[in-house]
Image 1 (cartoon, rainbow, N blue to C red):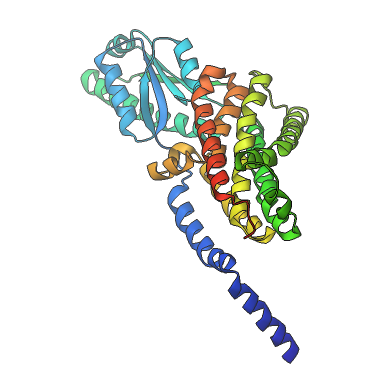
Image 2 (cartoon, one colour):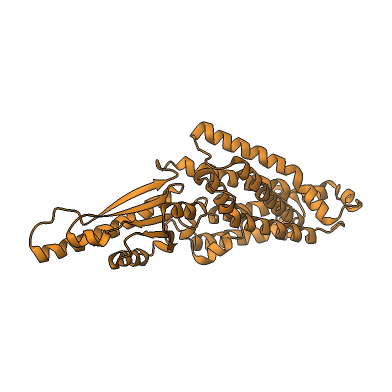
Length: 374
């Protein structure tokens, strides 16, 4: 028993010397509890919605105001055609569209059934359910008000339904979860493996004593950083290919857009994750510390990026924080290209974000790396 206690005492002394591990043990649970408890919300609110109002009447404007007042929809703009609706969805500016047909107000006045159409982006089944149910409840309430008003005026039973809602689901009409999840898994798996592979890069060199070879080499710091990243890019492309192929064969997940464009843009995403892992490696003294940093990054990156929970449901502050994560932008790229057939111009804004994150990480990592032994 005495020897067991001696070993336990020795282990505690070693942990006490490892300040990074102690800090993560104390701060990690608290930070994750506060962050996720504040940011994660399964209720889909502020759904970006465009309005295609062909009636342009007082009744249609009142309907749009009532829609926005529910808090579940955020009016992202007005469009003039279905082509513009498709463009807004491909660019990620809208997840739903309300179409008010011509003669909407006239049909309500004459007692005929006035139709409304809700176009939703089926590539996100969670958003589809929330958008459809909320608007259906709103339409039902307005229909009931109209029925009661007509009953008070005529005193007769009203047979016709005042307002009828038609839902049109694009891109994933069957609402299959695999269609939504598999493209997102491309980004998640690449993040997990790429960050972890390079996170232990310089730390491994330091532990093995081979860091001296890098110190005496004529390499400049940016050259060393880029050289550390490039070999793993090939590994990332192999993983990406396997995931897409397995998703197609096993789950029937389609790729509507350009596969070449997806692979081209994936280079920036893979490089950004490798640069992030290399940055962790420059901070850590051991491979164990580098691994701990990687795990610390994984959970926020997955939960705040929109992979598991609706991005629109998070508080504004959490959305701003998520914009600094490479996975947030790559999820929009891969789902946009694979499921909605987005083109380069549709995802150009996300590419700018990814490129900015990559340049920042390479710059910071290059400055952090010191060509000398710690």
